[in-house]
Amino acid sequence: MLTALSIKNYALIEDININLQPGFTTITGETGAGKSIMLGALGLLLGNRADYGAIRNSAKKCVIEGTFNITNYKLKDFFVSEDLDYESSTIIRREILPSGKSRAFVNDTPVNLSSLNALGTYLIDIHSQHETLSLGNIDYQFQVIDTIAKNEGVIIEYKQHLKEYRKLQKRAVDLKEEQAQAAKEYDYNLFLLNELEEAKLKPGMQEELEARYEELNNVEELTEQLSAAFNNINQEEIGSLETLKEVRGSLARISTFSPTYESLHGRLQSVIIELDDIGEEIAAALERVEANPEELEAANTKLQLIYNLQKKHAAGSIEELKEIQEELQKKVSASENAETDLSELNKAIADKEKELAAVAKKLHENRKKIIPPFIKETEETLAALGMPNARLKIELQQQKTFLQNGQDQLSWYLAANKGGDFKEMKKAASGGELSRIMLAVKSILAAQSNLPTIIFDEIDTGVSGDIAQKMGEILQRMGNNMQVIAITHLPQIAGKGNSHFKIFKEDTANVTTTKIRQLQTPDRVEELAMMLGGNNISESARAHAKELLNGIEY
Figure (cartoon, rainbow, N blue to C red):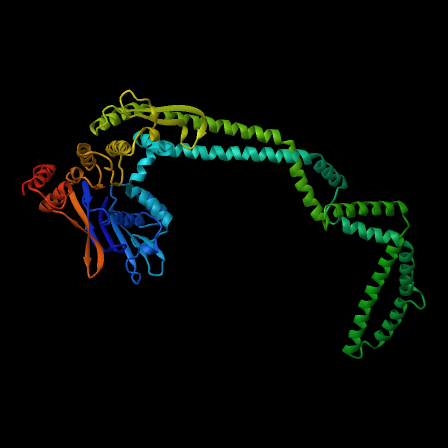
């Protein structure tokens, strides 16, 4: 509940600090005194966007701060999810700086407006005349029924199943599209795959074929050059090997004269051994060189196939062609296994539908169970509020389609007068009747659930004094279970408050300021008497005011 509110430098408010109590609190004041300003300030605490024009003194910052006792609100998980420090007495502060920048804090931790707005839904429900129109809104009607039916946990479960179900459905649509595209490309992909598989490509194959092709294509040149090289090494008289052997002999004869000559002899011996080995390899290579037109043609054919495949697939190597082959294999396999994949997915969808239907049925049964007593209690409350002939009808029909909050179609109908036909809620009631219906609904919700602080902004519009008296009694009863604040123009409601605040304007040095103060018993009598009879307060008005305050001694 809201335990304290501080407003500084906002609109006509210079500096207001009020402490609020549990139960039913009323706020009164003349039209234009600033009641809507206070609601605007509270709206900022709940995450509404800031208006720089609302700053009273543009040279100073505007600060609005609310203290909330959230002990019974079960909000620890929310605070953890938002990375906020949980305090049973939580302080929300909103600042609008002269620069126009807005800042928000929860227990001194900066937060963005979306987080503040999410937290605000757990703390305060501001019910204005505009909100009364939500009675005709399907989502609100479901919210009321589900709150009374205690369906919150079931709805969370349903929405999780629905999310998974729609994900599976989307995957099925995507898979069908993929399969349709794959079917169109299957024959071509299979042709490309077979072409690559038939090529029997292996890493290094291209380099080996290119080397062999060069050998076979240059047999004459190889024979000629290898023969010349062999002869130059091994000719008996003038070959390089014979010449070096003669040099070796010369060095051998002087190798004992010094280490230098011995070293030269050793080095030359190594050269002779290496040259002799080279000559043997040249001879072996020469023996292998022979013309083979068939092998040459085969190598050329294989290379041309590789080159054509690389050009077709824009690949630079056999390794890249192998990667393309693997991708084609996947596409072909996907096409060939398409029916199996789709069948498995359809089974998963069918299983999820059964789970969804089971949870949706539970929602339906819970709703169906509470609708009759809810109608009965609403009609009894409306009778007390001057609508004795009002009849409420709620139709709940289960559909085949999975909707956002189940399979139900929900419709509220009202027959406001005796013998009248049932019509849709938003078409069947006047503004005053809608206000009374909303109050009846809220009173039932308050008795059956842990609602946050609720603020009624002139819910008494368009009702008579007798009905206002009944409204006040209902608001007072609601205050037994929660904090209720009502901004009212009617003394019958104002007199029912456990505490009473008055908002008023004060002119000081040509400056108008909105102020608020809590009224004690004598002041409440005067306020109610003025609301009853105007500024010229009569003794009868005072007597009536005392009656409204239940005969308290003054």
